[in-house]
Each structure stands twice: as structure tokens, then as C-alpha cells.
Amino acid sequence: MFAGLSVPDSDVAAVPLVAAIVYADRVYPKEAVEAVVAQCRASGLALAGVLQHHVSDKPERRCDIVLEDLSCGTRTSIYEDRGQGASGCKLDEIALTDVACRVERHLQSDPDVLVLNKFGKAESLGGGLLDLIAGAINRQVTVVIAVPQSHLAAWRVFAGDFARELSPDPDAVRAFVRALAPRSTAASGAASD
Image (tube, rainbow, N blue to C red):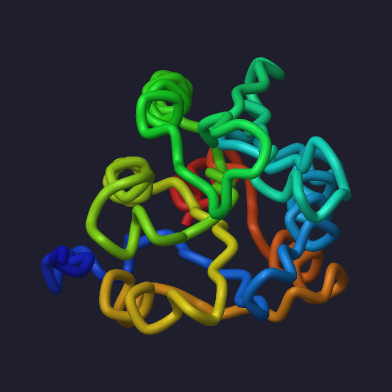
């Protein structure tokens, strides 16, 4: 397992928002996550992270998922091609690590929002994209991530009181994003106080 997020009491006010788009298992909130990205762009918020795309709607190809890097557009398949007749999906951990490293480099430019496709099994077990989430928190970057019901308990252990849970309704996530300010605006507003 993993340790939850922890921030010294003196820094609690500085912790950025962490939002989980909670959804029913196997009903990925594609529209909600895309609404986050679209609203961020419309609001002038700098983005890092990934969007998830299914390659095919066919049930036998449900493992055919690619992640699109929001900073550069690169698409990476994250599940191993196990051939015809294989049952179940096998995460390609090398591909996921490659995606995580690329997104981590984009975090160096201090985006306003980090959008991640999913807090799934890998993250529930202490791996996957957890380091990206922690890195974003340390850099004061707001995080938005989709969390299926089956991993919600693990998410709550990890995120603790720092996370807000959103419905997968596109209007709800757009309202959340509209409340965010670009970091440069927030910093200049704080300086003028």
C-alpha cells in the first residue's frame, strides 16, 4: 500500500485543490474529463497530463487504450497486445512509466492543472501515476483525476482531506474548473493583497 498525502499544518492553506471525478466501474467519464480539458483551455489555464482514448468500441478491444499527452499531443498505448482470444487486460508498465516521465517533465513548466486519466489498480497498489500526483501537489498544481468506484476507498486513503469528489457530470466539472485561476493571476493577486 502507500502513505497518504501529508502536508505540514503550516502549509495546509497552500495546498492546491485535488479533484476526483468519481464514476461507476467500467463507465469511464470521457465527456467529463474532456470537459475539464476544454474548460481549462477556454479559461486560459496551462495544462499538463493525459487524456484517455479508446481505440475501438468493440467489447473484445476494450483494452485498446491510448493516452494523449496534453502538452505535446503524443499518444501512447498503455496495455499490452496479448493477441486474439486473450482474456483480461495487462497494463504495459513500461509504457505507463514512459508517459509518467514525459508528463513529469512538463510539470517543470508549472502548469495550472494536471489532468490524469485514472486512479486505477496500479495507483491503488502504490504505483502508477502516484508520483505525478505527489509532484503536482508539491509544485502547487491543481490535480483532476478520474476515480472508479472500485478504487474510491484507496483514493480516499491516499488523498485524505485534500481531495474534493466531483460527479461525472460535465457541467459539474466545468463549474469546478471555472473557479480556478491561472497561477500567474493567483500569484499577482496575492502579491497585491
